Image 1: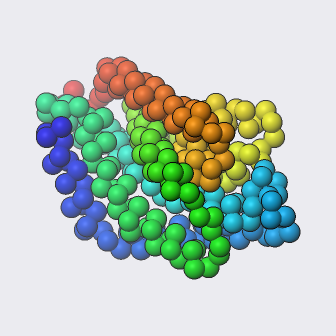
Image 2: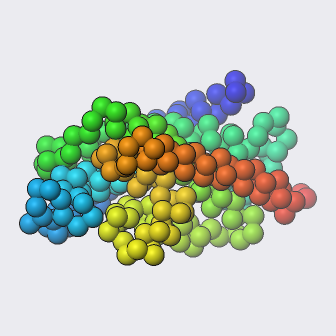
Length: 266
């Protein structure tokens, strides 16, 4: 792992050169969260204290949607953009002559992005809304489960973004692929509409896909919307399974994609 530490520090140094980017990201995230949160708060304005549609209270639905938007910021690790750009320019060929794994290089390089988004964007947005609207206060055990689940969600997001970036091996422009990915993930992860409010068949499909582990899974644990220890372990096991499975898919497709790689000079 020592060979990959310079890539993480290099990613951090690159981020520090564009500090204004965090201001723009924070404003965008706060605006998007405000639209979603206040829209759904209007829907749940007359909900009983025991819970409205989907079993959510007003504070519960507010917390769910706000943190779903913050998790989306954490998952925006730029891996899909950077991999696609390096494949298009042929820069990826330079990495192939180094004694390191390119997927691991991209993983370590994205860690500073995730950490910086969490500290410089996620925390300020959460504090801002905590002053504006009442939020649900999780139990300490649920908060700990949420922390573990968030780490797994970041791993899943990395694999999804890496696979999206690797589409550059078969198409010279991945913009459309990335737009479709963002829409599919936002919907089936529960970032736009909580999975508990989806129709039965659609909810079953969403729970079976890996995207649930990116938002709905962690938030289910945070809000205590699980059935005992078995329910919590089930959510974490599903996330871990998808993270391992997607990592294996990335490894296999990366080896096959190298056979399609063409850069200037052969």
